Image (cartoon, rainbow, N blue to C red; front, side):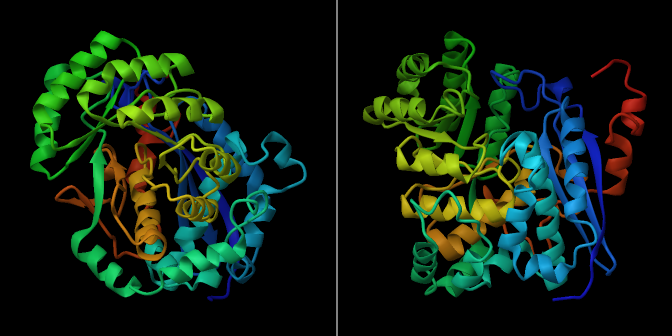
Amino acid sequence: MVAGRVTKVHVHDVRFPTSLGYHGSDAMHTDPDYSCAYVVISTDTDFQGYGLTFTIGRGTEIVVAAVRALSPLVEDVSLESIYTNFGQFWRKLTSDSQLRWIGPEKGVIHLATAGVINALWDLWGKIEGKPVWKLLADMSPQEIVSLIDFRYISDLLTKEEAIGILEEKQQGKVQREKELLESGYPAYTTACGWLGYTDEKIKQLCQDALKDGFKSFKVKVGRNLADDKRRLQVVRSTIGDKCKLMVDANQYWDVKEAIYWMEELSGFGIHWIEEPTSPDDILGHATISKALAPLGIGVATGEQCHNRVMFKQFLQSGAMQFCQIDSCRLGGVNEILAVILMAAKCKVPVCPHAGGVGLCELVQHLSFWDYIAVSGTKDNREIEYVSHLHEHFKTPVHIQNGCYMPPQVPGYGCEMWDSSIAQYSYPNGSYWRNFPRIR
């Protein structure tokens, strides 16, 4: 481990005007400006770490303030003390005796935690000269477990059980890594199905995605049943019967409404319904899961699941058939490792959410590690992909024949171009200074 200390935590409010083209629009979030609190960790070495946490416009300034509140817990701390006991450092960051009152481990303070932790992982990867997925894949089961805070989840998963899951997949890791580098990891596209798009645009985007090798498609639904049926008919008639089709209500329905709506849409061959109701309603999701099982429709959720404790309960209650981790909603890599291992014990496939600024760049690393070291399979597992905003990153995701291809550049892959920061920082970036109306 390189000697050195964290000298400063910088944070930027960065917002992109995606609402102008209805990119990212869904039943609940009709006009999102995809944004992030962008964190830069400076050290007294040659390395810097870059991380972010995803937002959709207004409110980003609150997350930025939360990152600044966490900064004294990170600044002037030695890199050795962070990385030799990263699990304990994560607990320290999430357990400040005053800051935890505005969580704990949820909401704005946890989004801020994710931004800081993501930057620390980017820094670690750069120090070790490895992309984060490879940094994780090269760790022993004991090293992985030392990164995780098992408080509140040991009734489902103990340290010993986690080590056992990882040891079981030690054999074959080298071959799986080789195969991953050659073939990549399956992706599904949401870029075709935003709620604000016209039928003509949806059809064209589906045709383009088919040419790019995509075999799984997701469509936003929830506001108007007749419109949903019409749009799903456009998609299904374009992609054919052999491609997977998923839908996403983004928390718009009550429980009974979700069941009725999905019964009405079941004729389109739906693989899963994502976020059918409040993301906090674990028992509601369980009720929906039970009702839709005879129709062959699974429930996917997790992108707004606050922490590993809620994931534990979703998994224990059978309320999710697809586990959707998010690289910024949870408290960064350390907490996500716990969720992936709990999902493995419960035999629930992990299909990450990746629909926002930098999320594709980040979450791919976690699925690669899941395949190499935990699940050992790609069956029924896919990473979400959207085509927006990758040009703002120095090492954007690479999609080949509908699959994510593993990056080789050290770090976590979310360092943005300085020019993008200068243009889209809010409210003083060059774009926003010239924008004619208040956002």
